[in-house]
Image (spheres, rainbow, N blue to C red):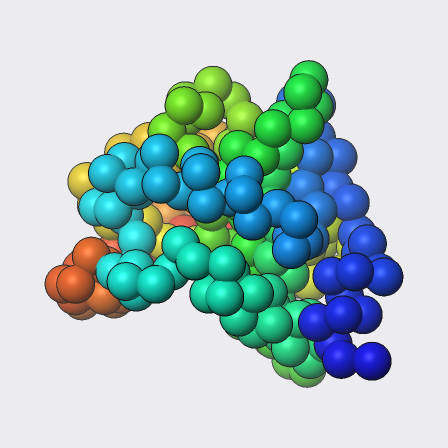
Length: 192
């Protein structure tokens, strides 16, 4: 059985619980809700994300995304989670732990997104908190890293409130919306 079928059809994977949200691995059945939320939030997300391929919102592209996630999961390199609201099960965003390194590093990078209708309501902080707990207590990692552009005040505030510490500044760190952009760098180590 392929990694895709095993990980996204027969194996539900970890479910992370927050007070307002829960996180789980994406499924092919999430396509309709995911594409609707991403389309509705396109202008809101565009300034903060890499340029989307023209076919990114299609079902075949979503299936390819899930296949890539499955390969990363199987290799132990990433955990992609979709985030859902407890009250009605609505898909509201996502949190991804990626670049998972073992050996002497024991670290990962955290990225996240939220649909515009759900922004600034505490959902992302709840989801990030659940992912932090999973990274340290579920995966046994020692360090998490995250980054945001200098003008993204809400993201920086979220990271600081979640326990990250600002560690520096990286020039032309990531290509966002077609341009190499500077980023503020944040880190967190596992509680002792």
